[in-house]
Length: 233
Image (tube, rainbow, N blue to C red; front, side, top):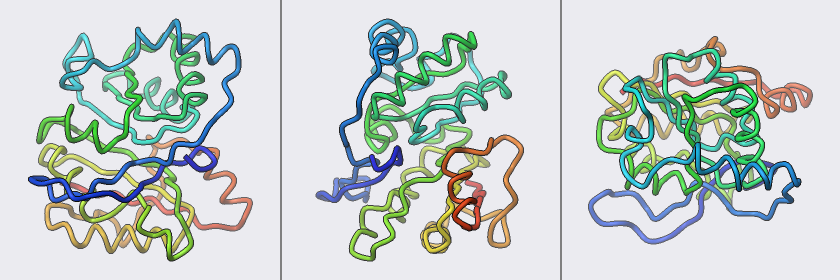
């Protein structure tokens, strides 16, 4: 993880999926506050996904939205509170961010969120059946701006093929970035996956379900353009 963002590493290609052995993050140490540490010990058992199908982690059937790399969790808490009719799974490995999310979920009394502390590629492969997700949301992943690091970017054609397999027909993929070269990279990757159709020209205004994030505010202060990309399966 880089400044709370999520990204990939290289590896071998896994047979049968066509997706390189990538990881959706780079693990970097983070300092836990005492409150975050208590949240991980006391609240994680309540909110953590089970070992099987993500949908089985909830007590009710509902549309399922996955956010990959939720950072400090503020956006996820906001979305869960404003979309109570949906179930959410947040995927993140950065322990301080997970601890903060757990505290906020408990404080807000939200029970429509579960947490997966695993690599997102593993969660999608192993715990997400084909055509089982209504939406996947990925906000401000690390842009890895240096050319030699582009292979570490999360958004790659093979990763998008896996996402497309897990989305229901008509399901949505929502991407956001404050780095225009990465936005262009995303659009090129989407074009390589025939199952996905870009709904923008080439992108859209921020949809009402996405709150303004820390990375968005920081990007705006630096004069960056914010790009939201909506893609339908």
